[in-house]
Length: 326
Image 1 (cartoon, rainbow, N blue to C red):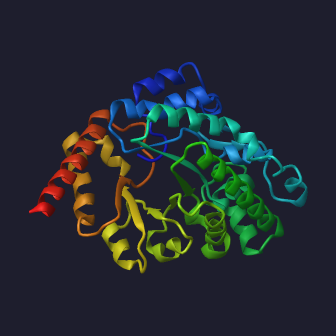
Image 2: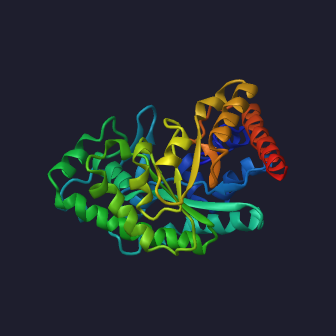
Image 3: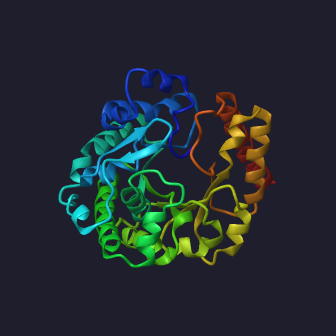
């Protein structure tokens, strides 16, 4: 169910009474525990490691925190050559050892039947956080830097691409079966090829070709052909466009992941199950569909609705296989 899979669970909320979010992601034991919590309740096919995309800027030397009601706050804004000198790519991937240790612990706990996903942010999305200094309504500062071709932004993207490639390779070595790249700031990227896609493409070329690469670009479903050009194995799509429409628009074979609206999990179980079945029926004529949400699960999701969706997927799979056998 993509990221933040434990936030709606009472056992996760119990842990939050004793530990902050940052304490949990920095502790291999706690990160592995939170990753496993949904798997103990539900028969998911895969787990995604409990972490955050901003551990990479932190490893570079730009710490982050969460301000109540204001979202993410970076320790400083990165906008000038002097700011750029405050970060160091040397050893950054190695400084994320706690993520690799969490992956190894989780891989051992999962067993061979359940896939384990690692993840990180795209260079553009991480650069946006670093330049804006945290959460932003429209990414005005990073967009202005892109518009004028600021060398600081170019150099930052180069650094992030190099560090992310090393980070993802180490996640794979630690037991990740696939890597997902989240481009959450994609809607605020003018000149998407130049400022985002070409950097994702470079990362894809530096990873083992046999390991699936999943790419999620928020709000960019209609540019699926461009997204597929990055070399991703799977496109993860939000709920704004029917998957079948994207499938027909793609020229090459690539799997699609998605795309149930997370809000569906906040309603009645039967309504959630019906919404899931609609996604499945939309993609039934096409191969290569990984059912999932169209974005991260929300804290207000109802446990009984999650269970209903999983049962709907299971029953649809069973019915579809029976129909194919006839």
